[in-house]
Length: 72
Image (tube, rainbow, N blue to C red; front, top):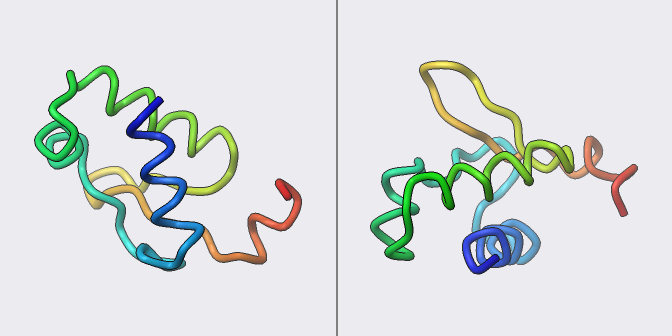
């Protein structure tokens, strides 16, 4: 999935750091020219992998590297 791969790379390469907000679904839709469900699916996958967490009303944020060590 193009959106998932791009977000994963941005996080892995440090372009989006721990504690930083990832782009919103609307921003992802505009950037990748995809449907909202596609953007939503990519964010959900990152959340299920433990890479990001969502705070209702605030956004979705990258977890710290320590939080992700179990996923390596």
